[in-house]
Image 1 (cartoon, rainbow, N blue to C red):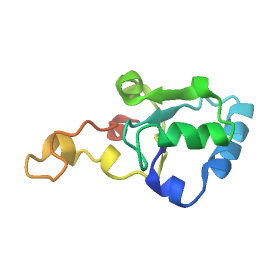
Image 2: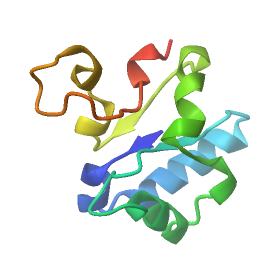
Image 3: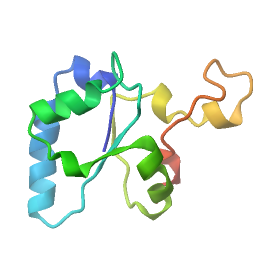
Image 4: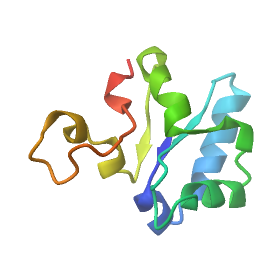
Length: 108
């Protein structure tokens, strides 16, 4: 799950935590991919997820999880946009060209 600013604005962290609990109860391996600047400031997503009691050990920084996307069945993006935009890597004229992004498009 890739949370973004839209999740924060919608105050959806508790609903996401509930979904996470239900999926994990069914044996699904759920992990959170956190972009370092997602939200209003660095660490914003971590604070929101902690507030909703999402276990810290299933949250991963971008550099620690990006290599896992090709082996990931589903990437659920919730309120994120620029932090998952492949144009940052493919379009030199993009306003976000060169920005590191979560490579969700590589998920199965």
